[in-house]
Image (cartoon, rainbow, N blue to C red; front, side, top):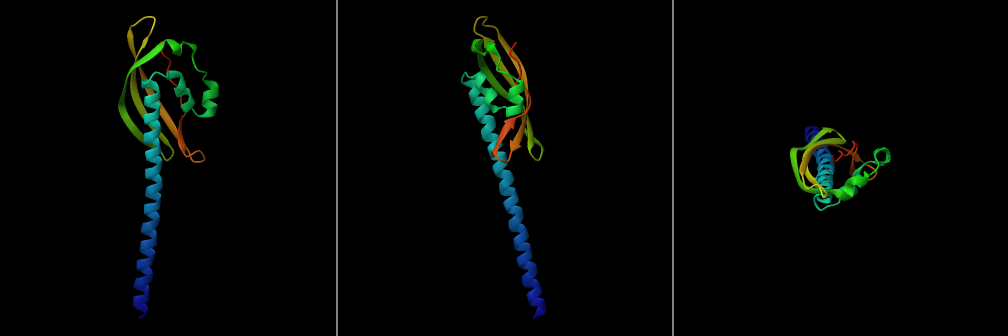
Length: 138
């Protein structure tokens, strides 16, 4: 009978450990889903003509050091291509690289800028914030 009890305890322990692992995976999946949603929102904000609004995606201390440029009213984004898909580089950090096509309304010459993004997850806010400066449109 004691062998039966040991097998039962071993089985219950294994189930508890597997359930714990699944919970951790669900938490990671939720974090990655939140990252995907945040990156899509960032892209949509740029693509639909609000380049100044992407500064709201910066972490507050980074935003304080990087004021919104005054020339963004003259910038129209024409394209946004992700050339390096999101990649988790640490538990709470991810990178993505995009190429942004844009024109200055007063010049009508298309240009591009490489946007190497670094994002960090804030567990209190349960969202991701960009932690590197947004590239300048020149």
